[in-house]
Image 1 (cartoon, rainbow, N blue to C red):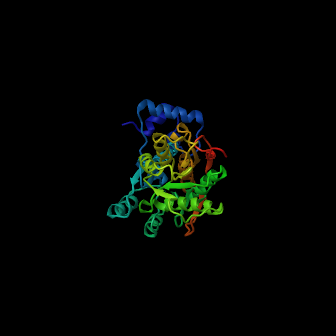
Image 2 (tube, rainbow, N blue to C red; image 1 turned 90 degrees about the horizontal axis):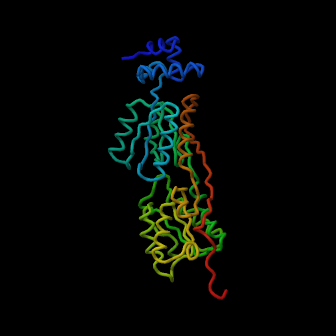
Length: 344
């Protein structure tokens, strides 16, 4: 098997120089680095991660815990994090974390505690005090995405503010008969995403002087296109009770609503305005007005924060530090002012 000495000999450099060039640690000119990489490729040399770990104390591996893999937001975050880590020479080990259960306990008690990681990123998981304490005891940097976690640097959007802005957009167009279609409290996501978006919706209505006490302002559904489609058929089916505008808690729900409206012969936006939250790639195809939350940017920021902590560790604190990332309103043709009655 080829060794670092063979690489150094072929490249015409010292063994220590070849090691620095391949590890990325220490200064080596770009010309020399390329010469060493070419030599390593020619003889099929692969650096041993175990050997590198003994020298640097690093495993070049990051553990990631996440509640869902197939849902759009989480898959976008994961893909972004994986690319950012690969660019820095790190591997990623993924743990699909279930709700509180013996399986979840095993992830913390065995995999995260006994396997060697340089750091851990928690995506959309509201960790319990016991889980946070266990992770802090490992002495490894921990970064979160989704909401505040005790003693952890986290990245999130303000779900209440985003929902308020989406609703205010509909109000600014002249709509007063607005409903919210989103996740149910029985299927609440971590960090109360469903509840926070409902809270923002109600706050915008109250600020506009509209009642939030009447029934029929909120309808629950799954956070999916089929979920939005199914509820849309029910909510829009009776023209006597049909709203003029809908704030959907996600773009996928909103797209399902648009499909349901089209099937019922309802014109969007002439008869019905629809706005969502996310910035889903399908939003442009359906001309959906939405609040874009940029999950790929959140993933990159999380990796950058973790690697920065690895390079310059800060004293552990019980205080959490939440970085709130902005959303932006992307206005397309799914929203307009309400249709005026004939003769007005």
